[in-house]
Amino acid sequence: MKNRYLLCLLLCCALIYIALPRLNVHAQGLEGIFSLSWIAFALLVFAGNLAALLFFNKKSLKKHQVKTMHKDTEGRRIRPKGTI
Image (tube, rainbow, N blue to C red; front, side):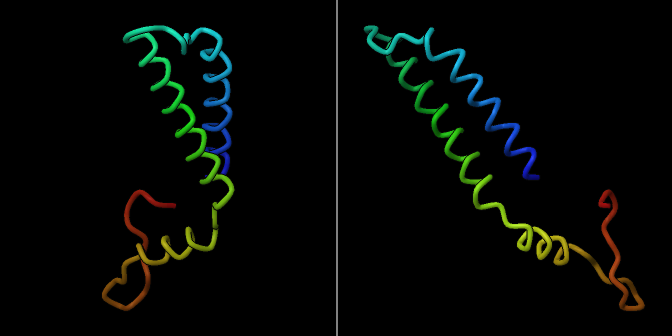
């Protein structure tokens, strides 16, 4: 899970690095509005992935996995189909 956040963070950085020189923030009209909104959304994506990467907690993930297990007729825990 942590690798996914790191990959998304690196892809976001690459997109910002490539797009930032091409976006004209000082343009008039729709071009300027588009540039500013694109940069704002890109920074939101960057911040969200960075927060997820920094505050990733394996214990809460394990608690969630235990809660999703079901009990069969004999009281044993069984996993739902499609889980490892």
